[in-house]
Image (cartoon, rainbow, N blue to C red; front, side):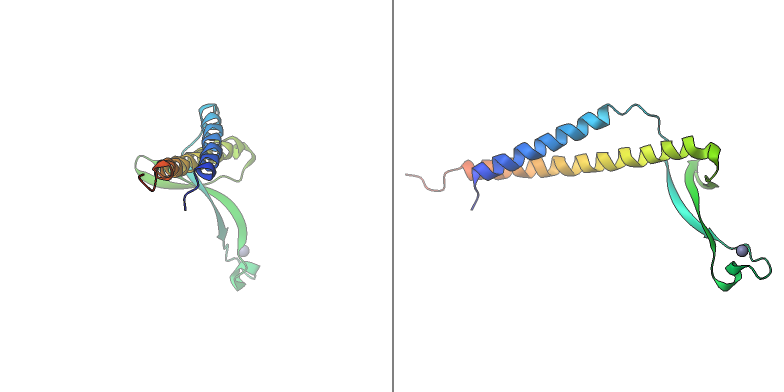
Length: 125
Ligand SMILES: [Zn+2]
């Protein structure tokens, strides 16, 4: 059974969340760089190093960037890479929020349908 009061409450809450998210996205001023961060373990394979027994070194932070249509991997663990890492994280966060916004929009659309349905009288008298 569809309860219009409950659906209204749900819609209000979703619209509020959507507004907050849109505000956050539209106010985003920091520059970002498109790419994905990942951690990597390596093996130097020197002499009796622990990595020769399977205990690899790391994790080290790397980035996969698209350069002229090719994926380029680069180590980003140095101090001077902090700015780049921040821009990459901002990109990831921006994308996450946009995805969440799309999800909310679909949910709101469904709730509008449910509200309409709940307001249509079941019995004609
Ligand atoms: Zn090693």
